[in-house]
Image 1 (cartoon, rainbow, N blue to C red):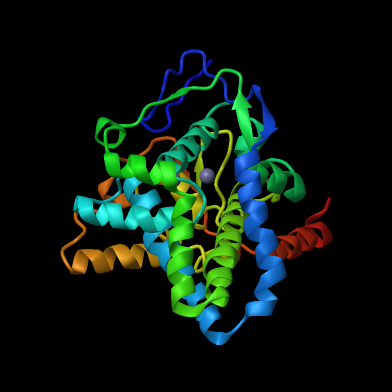
Image 2 (tube, rainbow, N blue to C red):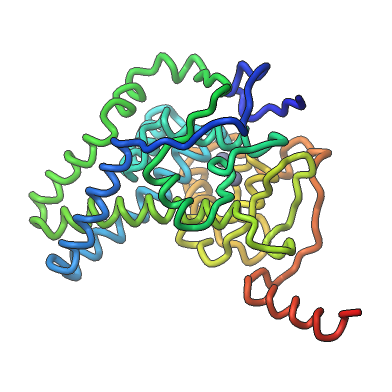
Length: 328
Ligand SMILES: [Zn+2]
Ligand SMILES: [Zn+2]
């Protein structure tokens, strides 16, 4: 079998198979999200106020942008820029506060998926290939158990790091600390909006962007600027979520240049995570910033003509046009 490597942390690939496995209910993860989602649905309308909304918005932007996108994804997972260790801890801690997983759990999930999507055969779970309801239940409430998984080996500097180990063991508990602080500041409204609503929205939103960024809804390559010719799954840009995903939804670019600190590469692709890295650089906190221009060329990468529209409705319109005028 053709073995294509993912990150350097995915090892032991000789017998690994990304297609053979089953999906199993993950009780802890599922109860966690049910608690957040149900408490949000019941109590959010009862506790809404302008300042609770402001707390929700501010914490969501900070934890998703500085935390999840820049700290966890672009720095810890991809090493796409360098920064002082104290800053890396702070950014990754904000990423932990998103409420999705600890730093190592996030890395494991990301790298496994990344590796699986480059194999010839990839399980529907790892490629988001099922319909939206099944995919929601699978990704948010279940785990994949591969019969022959690859091994996951953390780089030594992380495996021996006590701070990250602490974050990994206590990532759920961190919401309780934040909740106490929020309660002291503004009572139950702040707790519901700053923890329950925020975690439910962030984790569900993360899954939804992941779903549309991989699912093969389209016949055409409307939301693709690049094709990775040897991968079984292509990433797609989810235009509508560019800004609110902090730039993460320019996912076709990310499949093309995983190690790039800049994800929104083309004109009209806003990338708040990248703006934040530029800000860090301005103050001398970020260096060795990698972008496609400074990275080695990938021969398996094919540049596609830019469509310029991208929206599904536009694809439909074009298809209709083709059918009306070009049909044989
Ligand atoms: Zn992807
Ligand atoms: Zn990535």
